[in-house]
Image (tube, rainbow, N blue to C red; front, side, top):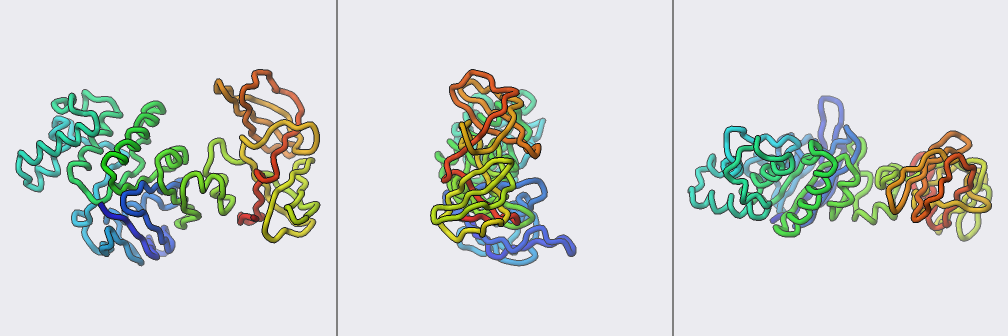
Length: 357
């Protein structure tokens, strides 16, 4: 079991920089997740760790060993792809043990490792079946089992659940979490789904345009984002953002006029001057109807989820403002209301995206 460390890693395709001076570390035994929108470089970064893409600069270490120029087979990693890539004419056992067979491992050793992987993944009753006899979730477990039997130092997952339906994705997320706790291996997982990132990760690395915008524990990124991009990307539904102008400032924070209303944001550091433009961010669970102040909105649609609902409303400028309600069954659709939030739950950002604290 080994950790992974990247130092000033770069990747160029011609004159185009895809990975731009990335430094990060996934400690031994941790579950790290690379998350970001399509084209941010997360899969390229994973393939560089695997050795499937050459680096244009920087250093990649696995277990303290420099593997930047080491061929993939000698890096001690196993990769699970979005596609199951199972051989349809082989049984589950034969698919899982195929790499061991290629390496000419003794038959008894192959069978023992396949049985152990099948036990961990609850595939013992399916070892004699062909892939066509399995569900999508079972096929993905076979692909993971194929990696487990190799006993790698690091597991690499490239969006392995994206081919599954919603219910199976939830189930497989739980199974991956249990698997990580059971075998204790270092795992790195790539996804564009921030819900997967939040539920799986020990550490999240949020990427945009080849840069790591912020790294940290899931709830740390949710509660304390460094910038508007991370604040808007982490969280479902996404954080609400409204343009505002500072109307007052004191030791506790600022008051800013937004959407024909006013909100207070608690700030401990330097304050923007009165008249400065800022962007206020509020998560849906922190907004609620108030009698005075706040943002005036018109309620349009409620997404009823049973114990709670996400209510979509429209502001004066036409922005979609979402707030969460719990335990209330009366309809607000069509009503004109005002929404407020505690000052310590209102984030303030500079127009260029940096966070004011």
